[in-house]
Image 1 (cartoon, helix red, strand yellow):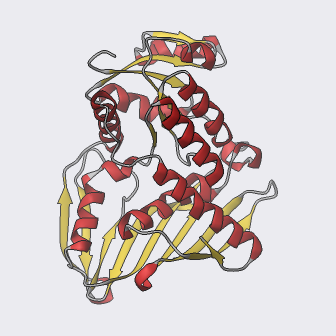
Image 2 (image 1 turned 90 degrees about the horizontal axis):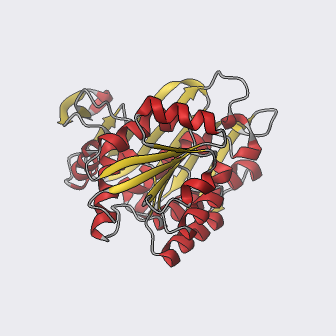
Image 3 (image 1 turned 135 degrees about the vertical axis):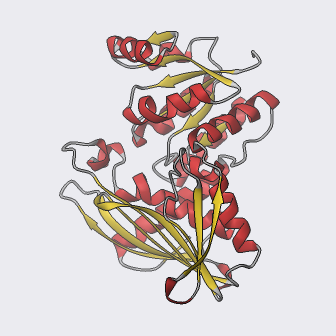
Length: 331
C-alpha cells in the first residue's frame, strides 16, 4: 500500500457525492481514486465534477482494480451486505453507510467476512468522531448533572420526494433504519452499555415502512432512553441527558456544523441554561475519514469496531419487533 489510502466509491448516490466524497478528499491520509456506477456515463460525469481520476461502469470493475485499497459504500440498505462481503473478498477495506445491514444476523456475517479477509470494516456514524460527542460524554462522566437517569434523543425530518428509496421496504426504507439508528447509537454511546429491553410504537405508510416511531430502551442501573424518529416531521436532531442535578442539551447532535463551534448546554430547573460548553468547528465526516485512514495505514483497529454495528442492529431488530407486536422485547 502507498503511504495513503486509495479510495473507491461504489455508487453516485447524493449523500456520497455531496457530503462524504468531499470529506474523503479533504481528509489527511487518503485519496479518492475511483468512482463506480451501473451507468458508465454517470460515473464519468461525477468523476469529472469531483476531480476523481478513474470511473467504472460497474461495481465489480472497481473492486477488480488492484490500486484501490478501500471502498465507501453509500448503496441502498438492502445492498450493504452483498457489496461489503464482495469488497472483503476483493481485499478492500470498507466504510459502509448506516445502518450497516438490515438485521443483526446480516451485520454479523459482514463483520465475519471482513475479519476473515483481514480488512477493516466501519459504519458511518460520523458524529461519534466529533469532539462535541466526546465532550458531552466526558461532562456526564465528570458528574456535572449528577447521576444519569434519562436520555431523550430524536432525529426527524420531512421527506417530501415521491418514490424516495427510504419509503420502499424492499430497499430497507423506514425512519428507524434511516435516522432512528442514530438515536439508538447515541444512547448506547452515552451509557457505554446495552439496553436490556425495549418497547415501541410506530405508524406505517401504505408501502409498509415506519414513518414515525418512538421507543423506550431500558438500560442497566435504572437508565431509560426515549428515542423518536420520523420521515414526516420538521428537522430535529438533538439529545438531552437528564441527571439528578441537571441536564445537558445538544441541538445539532448528529451533524455538527463545520463552520461553527459545537455547543453543549447545561441546564438546571425549568431547563434554564446555566453554562455552555463549546468544542472546535470541525467537519465530522472528515474526522471519521481520517480516523479510518489512520487505522488502515497503521494496521490498527478503528475507534468504533464493526462489532458495535452488530450490537446496534440487535437493538434495532428488537425495536421493530416491539413496534409490530405491541409488547416489550428483550434485547
